[in-house]
Length: 502
Image (cartoon, rainbow, N blue to C red):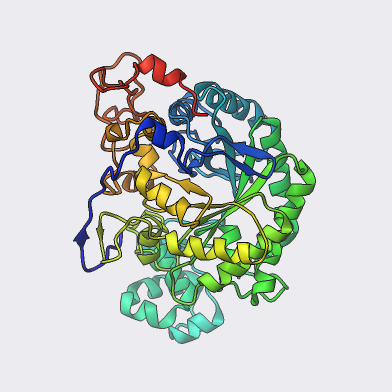
């Protein structure tokens, strides 16, 4: 991953941990109505992809245990990982493109609601993504993937040569010559692997995205409701299809690109179709970017305007993120696929403890606050969920006190300690296992390995019934919390699991 050149080290701290009465009177642990969905308090576990499904995208026992463990910490809400709405190969990523997935997803919702004592609301994030291929060996690229056009052959000085010989001649010309004769798109495919763009209107299936996606999202939303989720989050962020329509790099000429009004058209049509399908008594919101953090990308001014359009359309919440784009991703190794969190925009999405003077904590806070302020000035009360390096009560409470957001999302901190909200509410915040922001988890995600946290994945490996990673070296879920008996006011583990945050 890209790192700021300053390489200033930052360390997470517990901050001012509240007593139990202070926690229970705080803004963080106050209720919130989010459209038809009520949150008992304002802690939120954003979507993270743990790679625990299978090649068919089904809910496995590992998936159920993963989310049930978060639920034991009783956060206000959990958002299930990005879940595919199309029947396309996507590795061990959950899917929801067919009714056959409903039973498994219903088992998942039941497990979460039971593990949290009915406290935690459960949403599922719906995603569409375009095709991306691994970076090829040059020989494979020239022999199988490169389309020989008259223009290319002319630039290469190979006009009239039989195709097989031309391909071999191109291969033998070498990298410096390749960059001169290949067009920009072919050069990118050779260097990074072929990747589809929303601008590829020469491809019929890309042209048809505006006609097909609203119904696909709507059908997925209906399945989510049938599986007893409390709501859905439309994935309009990072490097994926809907974010690409919102991006300032979207230059489509069919009425769905170019101006902001055209770029937001499909995201609004998707939302409207979903809302028609599930009704007004089912929570529907989206996750989108405050800033793309790439050259020529979407700015905060764009996102303020987008948020206003989403709120006016009737979304029940908006959740903010930033960066995470393919546009500035590092070149992958041969045989590997590009990963959209390796460039500067990726750092802005998942900043690390080595940072610049701004630091990794609360890096998305000001932008989220600007969006919330824009909504309130427009007379819109849509709740704003903000994420980004939040790891203690003091930080979360200050964000709410400053009215920077309405709900505080904690991804990596919740991974480090799924019980952090419960511990804090009980006045035991000093027992929270703090994320160190080394991005060990992100490194596993990049390799599509089962995601764990280095702070616990080698603890108590001989614990009865512990589920291990495929390599047999790491535990797949955090150990159960054993509340310290010597801590004043502490409760035994079995009591802590039954304590309900109200």
